[in-house]
Amino acid sequence: MSRIRSVATAAAMNRRALLAAAGAMSLTAGVGFALRPEGSRAADDATGPAAQGEAPVAVSRQVPAAAPLAPYTKGTTLATVAAPRNSSGYRRLGDGPGWKRVVRSELATPKSGRAGRRTTLAAFVQFTDMHLMDSQHPLRLEFLRSTDRHAWRPHEALTVPGAISLVERVNSLRGAPVTGSPLHFVMTTGDNTDNNAKSELEWFMKIMSGGRITPNSGDPRHYEGVQNSGLKLYWQPDSAVRDADKQLGFPHLHGFLAAAIREVRSPGLDLPWYSTVGNHDALPLGCYGHGDPYLAEFAIGGKKLMELSAAEAKKLQDSIKYAKDPKGVQFRDLLKAHARAMHSVTPDEKRAPYTPADYLKAHLDPAYAGRGPVGHGYSSANVDAGTQYYSFRIADDVIGISLDTTDPGGHYNGSIGTAQLSWLDKTLRDNKDSYAVVFSHHTSTTMSNTRPDPARPGERRHNGKEVISLLSGHPNVLAWVNGHIHKNRITPHAAAGGRAFWEISTASHVDYPQLANVIELVDNKDGTLSVFTTLIESAAPHRTDVADLSQTGLAALYRELSFNAPGADKTLAGNPSDRNTELVLKKA
Image 1: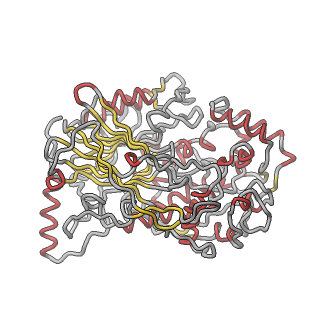
Image 2 (image 1 turned 135 degrees about the vertical axis):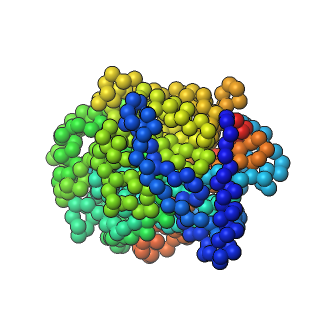
Image 3 (image 1 turned 30 degrees about the vertical axis):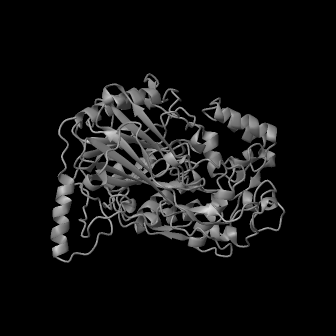
C-alpha cells in the first residue's frame, strides 16, 4: 500500500494543545478528525457519475477535542454486562461481570509496546438489527409460534423505547473505549425496521435524529394485537389469563400495553449517522418481494390472522426458510383461506409497505437531518438511479463503503449485482491510498441468494465468496462490518501475498444480549494495525422494576423480557473471542 498519512492524529494533538491553553470546554460529540471534509459518493451504476468519481459533496461538521485522550470504558461491556440473578424460572437481571478483551493474532503477530505507540485512525459505532416493530401490523407472522416458540417474542412491543435507550447510551460515551478518541459517527447495518412498514420507517428516522414517537398504529386509543387477544399462545401481560408464558413465570403487568403504545421521546444521536439497508427494510416481512397488491392492501386493512395450526405454520415457515415462496403467493393463499378466522383491527394507511425510493427519500428529508450528514450517506443520485449503496470519507486516511446486499427478488439471504460489485472494485482502486471499512447487512455466509433482481433480470448476482475474493484483492481493506445473523462472530480472511481483513458480525438489538459495537482503527507504528471491537448495551438499568412503566423502565423490561423469551438462542453473545477484541493486521 502506498503512503498512508497520519495527519489526523498530529493535527488533533495540535488542536488539543491550543484549545486546552484557551480553556476550551471538553468534547461532547462530533465527527472526529475528518480533516478533509467530503460527502458520500452515491452509486448509480457502474457507468454513471458515481463510477466516474462525481458526486455531491456534503460537508461534515467537526468538533475538536479539548481534553487529553484516555481510555473510556464506562458504559461498555468491559465494565459490566447484564446477567441473571436467579437460576431458574423467569430470571431477573442485574449487574454481571464485564467481558475481558481478547487479542486475536490469526492475521498478524502483535508486538509488545504497541499501546504506547499507537495512533488513532478512526472510531465509530455500529448499530444493527434493531427491528423497530409495529407489533400490531396485520401481516405479522406471530401465529408461527404454534410451531416455533421464538417466531414471536414477548418483548416485541418495546422495540422503540429499547432503541431510544441505545441512542442514550451512545450519547453518554465520552470517547472511544481503547484510545479515548472522539467517535466519528454511528452506522446502522440494516434491519432498522421489521415489517417494511411506513410507520416503522418514521419511528426509525425519529429515533436516530430526535423527536417524539407514538409507537402505535390502528386505533389511537388502545393496543390491538396478539397480546390482548386472550389467546394462551401469547403472553397476555394485562390479563389474568394463565397463558403459556405466564406458566414460565412471566409477570402480570397491568397497564403494560397502554404504556407500550404511549408517546416517547428520542434525543437523537449527538453524532452524525449513516444508514445501510437490510432485508427487513427492503422487503415485506424481510422475505417477500414487492408487487402483490393483495398483500399491500392486507397490510393497511382491518383483518389480522392470530392463530394457525402447528402443521400449517410449519409448512409456511419452511416455505420461507427454504425460499420456496419468494413472491408470497403461498402466504397470500393461506391468508385468503383463513379469512373467517381473522380478528378485526382498525385499518391504518401508515402500515403500508415502503419502497426503496421511499427509504431514500426519508433519509433525504430535512425533517430527519439530525446531526447529519444530509441523506445519511444517500444522495439524490441514489434516488435517480434506484441504488442504495455509496461511499463516504470517514477520516483523512479512511473511507467507508456501504453496500446493498438485499435481493429484491425475495428471501431473507442476500447477494449483490454485477454493477454494484464492479462499483465496489473501482471505489477501492480509486481510494487505494486510504484504508477502507466495508459495511453491509448480510454476512459473507448469508450472501447465498442469487435470485435475479426483477428490475434487472439480465444482471448476474454474486455471493459472499465472490465478495470475499474481491475484498481480498485490495490491501487497503481492514474490515467488513455487518449483522443479519443476530450473533457476535468475528472471522479472519487471509489471502495470498499477506492480504487480509477481518469480518465483524455484531449481535442484534432485538434479541438478547441486545448489543451495539464501538469499533476503533489504530496504527501501532510497528508494521501492524489493530481493529478494536467493544460491545455496548443500552443505557437502561440492568435491574428492572416491573411496576416501572416509564420510558426507561420499559427499556429495562425490553432487555429482561428478551433474555427470558421462550426458545431464544442463548449463544448469540458468541465466544469471548467474538466480543471485546483487538484484531491485529499487518500493515500493507
